[in-house]
Length: 157
Image 1: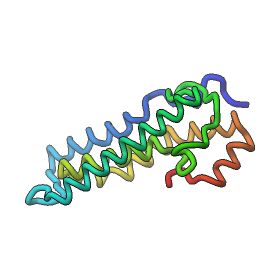
Image 2: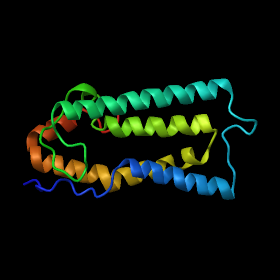
Image 3: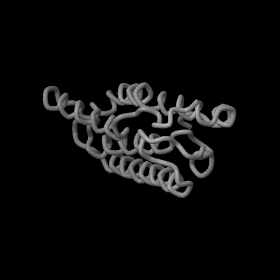
Image 4: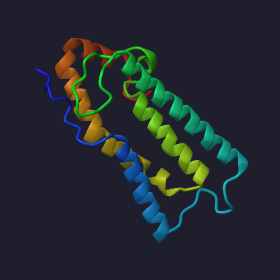
């Protein structure tokens, strides 16, 4: 039976990305590490801006879809509905996918390599401290429907 209090995530998931950037900034202050030592080129900046725009759009599409189905976007509250439409047809975590794209795009625009080096750590932390708990909650709350959804739709893309 699903925990009526929700998945047990006690902090907003975007904080994982913010924390990754904070650690990257601290590392940069100690050991500067740029993507391009001569500064970002136009193509790098355009790619970064595109990644941020796409990431923001995907994140807000996921958020709007949750709001349309009147289910909580706050990770410590229980899900009311299993959302499987909109961006959730392609990814079980479009909001996190969008945040990842924003994170990468910002690194490109800022010409900062440390955030990219730390991205695997950020994603592992997101998975172990947030996604695993959310998935357990959804599995408990929606049973076979959620299992079927997991077979059809990948966690990321």
